[in-house]
Image (cartoon, rainbow, N blue to C red):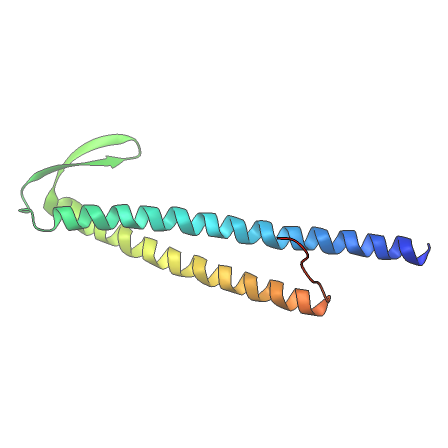
Length: 117
């Protein structure tokens, strides 16, 4: 193989790896956005239900089925879900940062310079 063919193949491999990094980062960012939105919804509902009396009737959607509950039944489960979402969000942000650092190290190692983003 000529030097140009090897160089072109290497360039294609680097472009594929770069695209893979970018796609992964974009997917994680999308998940972060979804979890943030769901977390905000939970926060809003918690703020709405907290001042209400515990025996007040409320409705909760569980797997597409609307169920009748009381505020005192729903609040603990809602708080637990909100806490889990917060934990998931923290993990996703860590994953995003780690992947970004990995990409930067890869760029330095392979002497990759992005021409257009």
